[in-house]
Length: 71
Image 1: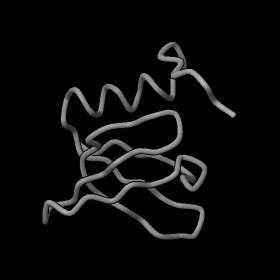
Image 2: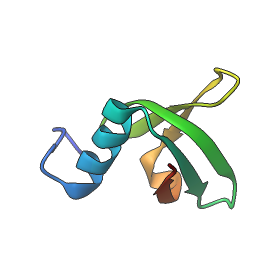
Image 3: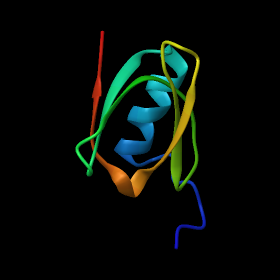
Image 4: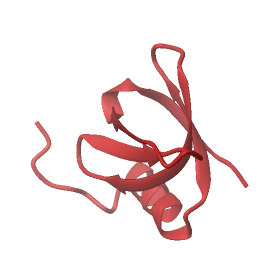
């Protein structure tokens, strides 16, 4: 179980950059679903993504196959 939020990890840094720059991203889930939007926050277990309709989705990091930043 993760007890600390290690901000030195590249994956954490990448998501933090997406949050700070408010850049949209594409999240492909292991189920095959794709979620597009901006990352609002992350914690050791989840990320929260807001889409173009201002709807928030909280995704368990374990469910993410990849994250592709969009420009």
